[in-house]
Image (cartoon, rainbow, N blue to C red):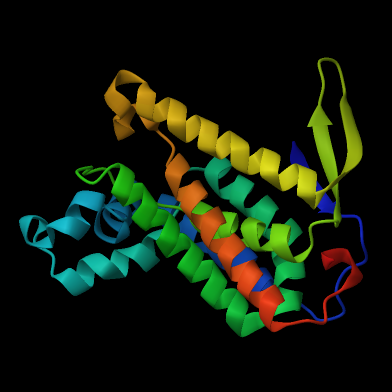
Length: 234
């Protein structure tokens, strides 16, 4: 399922942070791939490596430098499909969440979701020396918050069939649990295959799980503190 847009009208406020991220992430991606050596250096230096977080001195890093990669890794991507998928989800869901929680809290959600995702990934693969990059944990946090804040919001969704594509409206309470279930299932299957090594997993599924869980917690706290909600969020 590919989300296209929200069926409800767009928020009155301009989602400045969402738009800025949708511009900044592709620009950073272009910088990565303008020169292969520069791209490799950026991933090597600023990517998040679980083993480096636990024992930074073995990699020539200080503890603070290793912690910094929890954030810097969120702005790098490994390929066009990786980037494109994140941008689509950010564009569709980010504006609505930003409008409801405010730009400042949205930035906190974005960063904390990515950090939470990386920490869960590190908990599953604590000895990994493979750099993990991407905003997937951040996007997952936005989806988790959206599920709590706007569960009935219809999402115009493109579904590929055998010989054609169809557009249908799927409520968030259906779309997002299905999305999360696929992430969890893939993460579980990756752990069971070939000893559960990250080399076999390929995708940091557990970062998606961690980010989504953080987003749901964030959304729950926001709803508890804000008794007045939009009709779509009831």
